[in-house]
Amino acid sequence: MENILEVKNLCKKYKEFELQNVNITLPKGTIMGFIGENGAGKTTTIKAILNIIRDYTGEIKIFGFDNKKEEKKIKENIGAVLDDMFFPEILTPNDINSIMKDIYKKWDSKLYFKYLDDFGLKKNKTIKTLSKGMRKKLEIATAISHHPKLLILDEPTAGLDPIARNEVIDIFQSFIQNEECSIFLSSHITTDLEHIADYITFINKGNIILSKNREELFEEYGIAKCTKEEFEKIDKKDFIKYKKSKYEYEILVENRKAFSKKYDVDTIDKITLEELMLLMIKGEK
Amino acid sequence: MLGFIKKDLLMLKSNIKILAILLIIYVVMAFQDKMNLSFLLPFMSVMIMMSTFSYDAYNKWDAYAISLPDGRKNSVKAKYLSTIILIIITTIIITILSFVISYAKTNIIDFENIIATIFGSFFATILLQSFIYPAMYKFGPEKARIGLMTIIFGVAIIGGFITQYVDFSSIINILNFIKTYWMIVFFIAIVLMLYISYKISERVYYKKEI
Image (tube, rainbow over all chains, first blue to last red; front, side, top):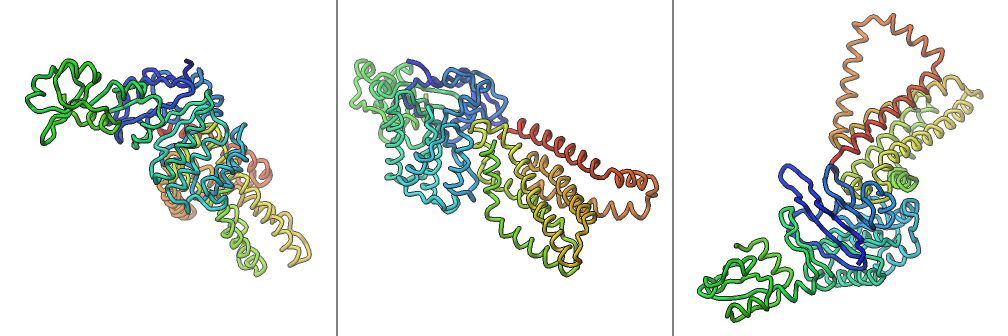
């Protein structure tokens, strides 16, 4: 399968934070969910992919082209929703149309206004009068109205109510119907990703600690729950992290089936992304 | 590029009223021979354009702009060009009005004086833009505005001091030279100032960690 986005050994150093050898591969026609806690490096990675930040090292290829050398060609085919970064709020959706048709060669005003109608957005209201959810919808409509092949979305569903989130997710899913298109999507709302992402990439403290096909992840990973006595018999090599609660131990295991064959524990559940995040970040080893 | 210029000009919509009020004040003052305020409109154009930097910063437009095709290249260029467009438009309006008012009052048009005054205000406005824009990019709109006030205040104090204690005979020679060739000198100075200022702003913007 051809890759639409390849990030190799991406490093970026700040005073108190560092991205360390970030590697990401996003195949064409798929959605990758990018998860991690606040300050883990999600936005920095996205900014590097879009060549917004300076002085990072590593190689980033989008559509097979270097993101610095072929920047213009690449950006004609990317739609981005960035966390809290957008047009100045005194502009209106109508202004955005007027501006974007002179920025993107393939800007489709008809499609843009169709999205505005679908989202119930008024054309002449300034951005500052919009609610957070409506503003997010406007950002999404703006990102997809030039027929991009890759959507890069940083927290696109943050601040949306469940109904609006569903609408937005439906748009992402219809976008991906075209097999030439892909989505790279960071989100705190892990339940959204459980439904739509084909791949899950997990970043923590600037390091990618997991990148896997969603089906494999949910099929293989699990949480074993056991007593203190049972836990003490388990070899450390056989689990990733554990968390001690009041009455039991929760153990994150990489292979549920192999673990249940080796150890006699009562419960091994399938994992949710939220549990995975919690155990990976807060768990002990 | 056109899209980025449009963005800056569309941001001025809410300030059109201020410019219209200033225009009325100018016309009233000019008819009453109270004060020559022909500098007011172009000067306010820069001040209003400066307010767009604050909106840009508040909504983190710079980062978003870079995610667009040729965003890094065009952002600074568009800001300079849209400001110059606005200064030129306001200067043309003021020039036409000055001619009309001059004719209405005296039945003759005082070309030489009007052109000299308006050219002077145009030069001063470009000078202001050339100084303040690199500071806007380097320090951000809030600090740059405070810096601008400090500079204006400082120049006024130092200027007042100098006029009392410095011998101006050598400067008068230079002024005489400028008087003879003032159009060419001012034109070269404007182009040079803008070019240097733009290059500094561009460099600051390229190096800036957004």
